[in-house]
Length: 456
Image (cartoon, rainbow, N blue to C red; front, side):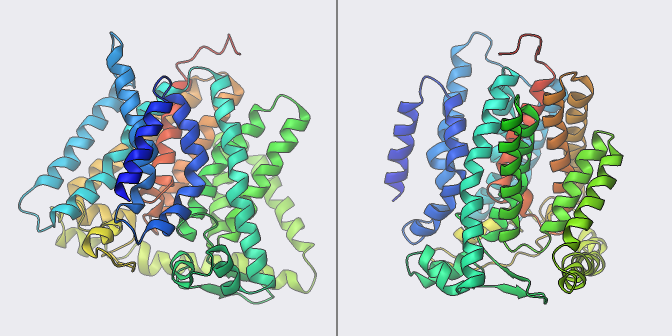
């Protein structure tokens, strides 16, 4: 199977050898489908989780670097502060990877370092990709249209699970393979919250529901940006409908925190754009709209959607998010080595087994302490501060409204990711959010260096 993946990668290189930028569109197109293919070939090769890396992302890297080498000035263009810190950060991770005093298996170290720094080059690629607002608009529109497919599939999976049968629906989607259906749904996990409200763990075309949900959250950036970039009323309505489809798709994933994530995202977006009155207006409109779900159902709906989410958040805050840091810092002050708390390492720790591996912690910041120690936590926080600083610079220096909206969306996404990381690390470490943000980030930086006087 590995040979087949390498052959596909070779053909991708040949087809796109003259224009690596077109490969970005291929990546966006294939993001919703890699997960489904991965599940289908998981029993054939241990490298199934790397299918997107082998077949598309590595060719992008190769062609991008080759293109830079052909030019007289082959430097990678990024703001000097960011570029220097990225080099330092990569070196820091490598030092913690090769340190012989850490008791970590070699292949686990390789997986760990890959999770930490493999996708950082996408920042430079996103930076080089954007040459005009037109190119950004075209990519956002393409991303938005592609996002319809997995979201509609997720919605159909939910309707089938709700009105027909959960297990039967997923068996149908995976061709009767019960093992695959149970893997992608966390053993057919479902939640009954009363009032007829039910949630099912649904992956759409992804490997897990969390991947699908993370995709929809990331998709808010290009889909909402497409609304802003729209030149006509009909175009604006079209992309606004897609935003609605993405939101419904996110709910179909069965991730109970979806309401909280989306509210925070739009609140951050409005606040960054200093439109607080719109935040209040949206909150009132949402409350009124929910009240029309039915007089009898509305109290239950409010209880399950808002109160239960609040209770879950409080529980995690008291018992998970803010607990254990003192013990972790004392136990792992110097860290235990890269990969020692990497969930993805299960593929090399338990070869041939399609099971679940529970790491020491799923919380991203605690993962940082376990693998990189107290110093690593400081370095990662510095990295996050630099990211915020660079996006804020773009927002401040951009006079073009549409381009500024894109940067604001990227910053709102990142702030949300920082909050989500206090509950789980998937938003930074799992496909596809682990590389999509870096791509968006590179584009957001580049926008402030463009001249928008000559728009296409």
